[in-house]
Image 1: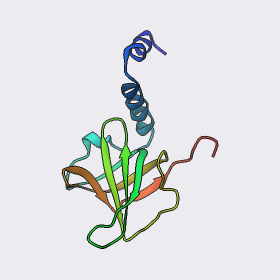
Image 2: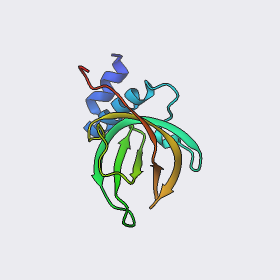
Image 3: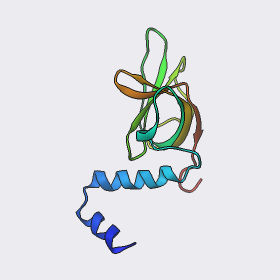
Image 4: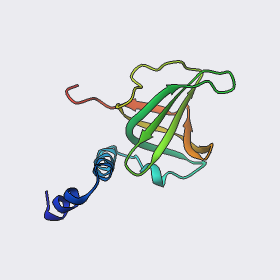
Length: 122
């Protein structure tokens, strides 16, 4: 670890350190962009960690909603017509691909393709 990195970690907040670590992990996924750089109304790929997963009906249709965080920002993931998805749980690393849009003022992907990343020891 360089002196600059050590000094930054010494004075940075825990949130800043976690964001840096997430950016490094997300960058390891080939072909993925940072969430902050995803363009609206275009297909994109991103990777990160799921911070929350909830079942939330949308207009009477069940849906699984998750928040992906990669250190640069958050991306809402919505799978319509599902009540659960095996492996989609908070703390899990995932790579997603799909159309990026805005829903309720937030960057969102509906029914994205996804790849679960192995956990430590898997």
